[in-house]
Image (cartoon, rainbow, N blue to C red; front, side, top):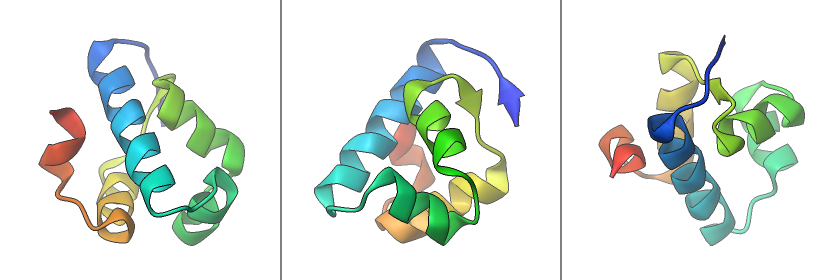
Length: 72
């Protein structure tokens, strides 16, 4: 977990949030499936923390979206 704020992380976070809401899953629900805290999930969505590649791969799988889509 790396604390950093930049445009790429904000773009990633907004995309994750949009996809999560699209499948009607709460932050807490997604965090539980990922094995992370709801607070950490919130920080990812806010662009405050960069998720590990492992977490990002799990997010992509749960949200049924290629990782590359998070950065568009």
